[in-house]
Amino acid sequence: MASIEQDIRGFVVENFLFGDAQSLPAPDESFLASGLIDSTGVLELVSFLERQYGITVEDEELIPDNLDSIERLVRFVERKRAARG
Amino acid sequence: MLVDDFLARSAERFPEKVALVADGRRLTYAELDLAADRFARGLRARGLERGDRVAVYLENTPEAVVALFGALRADGVFMVINPTTKPDKLAFILDDAEARVLVTDGPKLEAARERLASVPGLSAVVVTGPVGSSLDGLPVTSFEELIESAQGRGSPVRRSIDIDLAALIYTSGSTGSPKGVMMTHLNIVTAARSITTYLRNTPDDVILNVLPLSFDYGLYQVLMAFLVGATVVLERGFAYPRVLIQRLIDERVTGLPIVPTISAILLKMDLGRYHLPALRYITNTAAAWPTRHILELRRAFPQAELFSMYGLTECKRVSYLPPSELDTRPDSVGIPIPNTEAYVVDEAGSRVPPGTVGELVVRGAHVMKGYWRRPAETEAALAPGPLPGERVLRTGDLFRTDADGYLYFVGRKDDIIKTRGEKVSPREVENVLHDLDGISEAAVIGVPDPVLGERIKAVVTLKDGARLTERDIQRHCRARLEDFMVPQVIEIRESLPRTSTGKVDKRELRAAAGRP
Image (tube, rainbow over the protein chains, first blue to last red):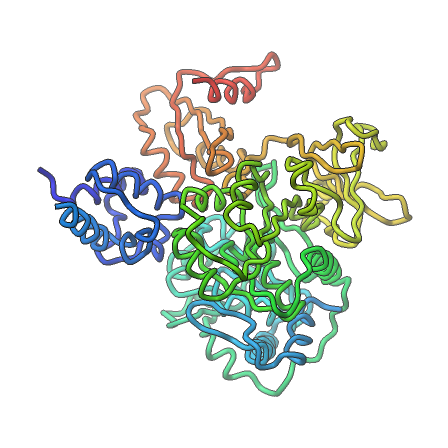
């Protein structure tokens, strides 16, 4: 089974870079600062996480601390899955 | 009155008051006023002359605000360029405007380095943050150094008067090339006064702006705040609705300007949980505000007045719906803003009775002087007015009025797409598509979308043997177009439908896109 990080990289490359894996930001690089993702991108990303991992992202979790880099996304998904048990 | 007097006068009245919150910094009116003076002196020392264009290619930062007021104080003309603009288009705009100075940051300069060599008029680059290596034959100065090295006190000696140009605002045109809307000091002062009048802005207002300053709706949030001595909170954009709500709470924001894409995203949240007693008004323009958004926002924020408005860059704003009319005619964009006349005409230019659809014409001191160095397009947009020498604006938008004179938007005369509140010229996107080897024909249309207003769809045919995928085409566009212009949907077809005259039948494409 692919790791969460691989899944997320794959999603970002497919949906925001249209297959251009070379332009993928570093794991700790902000999506916002790199201009990769805007408000509608955030919504797409959240619906992907919910679909892929069976988690529910609450309004108050829609913050850059959880979602604004590959690293943060991986940690967020891991936390959510652990909390679910 | 000049536009930069907004800052000078508020600095006199409220020197210690916070004028601008951006990038985690809080700047007072006195600090901004001083920085604008010094920036102006720095520009003059580097040879900026009256009427010269200063391009500001930055995110929503304090430096961007200082640069545009500094340009005015040096008797220059500012132009704000969307920070997601790609190097080719940046070079086109700088060349078109014959910009003398470019104000940007290191990474953007680096990305545009090669293209800037082909912009002959440019004589200086000012960079915020660390300065990298210099450009061939083009001096690069740091923003800080420009301000610190400025000699003398106060603003430089001024010669501008209010009928001089203050700004070029680049906008998409139906021809595919962006064009610079020429706004004088008088144009901008007139519009800012009118809008702050009906919004009843006061020095107690705190306005939160997430829209780019390249977009006149975003730019005016700063200008109008400074006109009345209010505080403006600048955000670099709107990606996280929860962050926006937190800013509204923390800064006790009283005024929130949005576009329908923002209300669509906000309304996905449970807004009833947030208490925003300070929020006095929300405004919408740039694209029609769906009635459902209006009703749900009103339920969530009953203390806030909602202003549904309409305008276009060429005169800034045309009309607003008084909030008391929301229940009776939520689909109307209201009445002309103070000190403006707006009426509907037929093909011959004669006024039509209520209920009849025609083109909206706007009269007022806020109507632009024309498109920079585009006499034919200027001629088409500005028609002779009732007084000798006067020009009125033909909006290109189809409208009707009701029996009480309220305005209703019916549609565009051309095929300009409105997505996320931004205008996109299908021709501009088609030109980029045609540059991709392997594409034979391309047609770009807008498809209705609940969040974006319209989604951009490109329908293309390929040359024989070409093996392009949808992804290849989107990647090509992403490298060349601003983010909001990249087609969300690409459809590769064998052929495009034709009208009887042999043109691509966009009506048929739009109809097909609307069918399940």
